[in-house]
Length: 323
Ligand code: MRU
Image 1 (cartoon, rainbow, N blue to C red):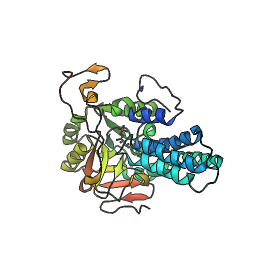
Image 2 (cartoon, rainbow, N blue to C red; image 1 turned 90 degrees about the vertical axis):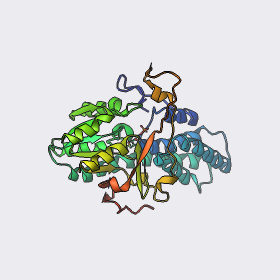
Image 3 (tube, rainbow, N blue to C red; image 1 turned 30 degrees about the vertical axis):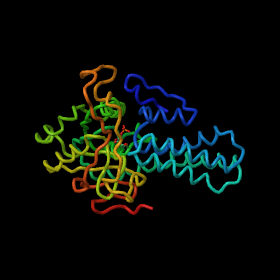
Image 4 (tube, rainbow, N blue to C red; image 1 turned 180 degrees about the vertical axis):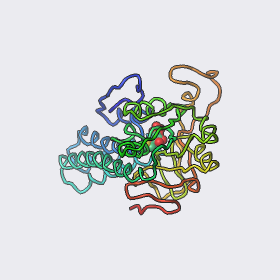
């Protein structure tokens, strides 16, 4: 895995050999982003399968269930994590040897990873139809290749538009408290030579009011029938976009949809208040001041212009069919 906490200073990879190590990597955001968490969850089940000492298939399946629960609980809002675990665990069922279970889980994890890249390219190709040459696009957090196995969802749309020869530029919101926008999105886009300007999260209103933003495109961690869950701050941009009549697009794979739940039933992950009291290693508040740190927010569907998926572009309340 690329250790995303080290970017942009260092591009280093880490080896994760156990479910516990992977869980720690997920909790600490070394590996992050909804689609990537889907693949990581499935590979985590493969780690559990190959690391198990059971030679009885039934016992191994029980151990895999426990590993799955442990991985799923690492990030409760990002639905792709449980989706990836669920796919790997269903692939494990129905085999009568430990060897066959291991191979089936690993194959499923590889399949998820391969599918993810193809899905993102389709999202990019479909979504780029919404982009015109000259567009200045605002994005929040990182929904790029780092957040996926490759290519990205929201940034995939931008990449596709650029590949088609459209001239676009991006405003990357820094994304407090953990700076996925400044550390990851601005790095990723700069690496690709796509013009990017970093702004404070709170500058988006000013830019929109001054006519400097043509479109907003973000990723998602979970999409219910009534709301899009994404990195905290997304909702603010959506309200501002509506106030300034700017289209607000969400790019996400079908695996991010959770049409069985509604907004109020979804748990929003709350993280360590120290992430707010600090910026990197620097303490930027009185050390014991109370701080509240929700990692995501919910944007009501009324504010979403369209959701770009690999199955097409949906204009709410229209939703894809999700099995
Ligand atoms: O806490 P993070 O960094 O995992 O949050 C990620 C986001 O909010 C992304 O926008 C989302 O996962 C979509 S990634 C294609």
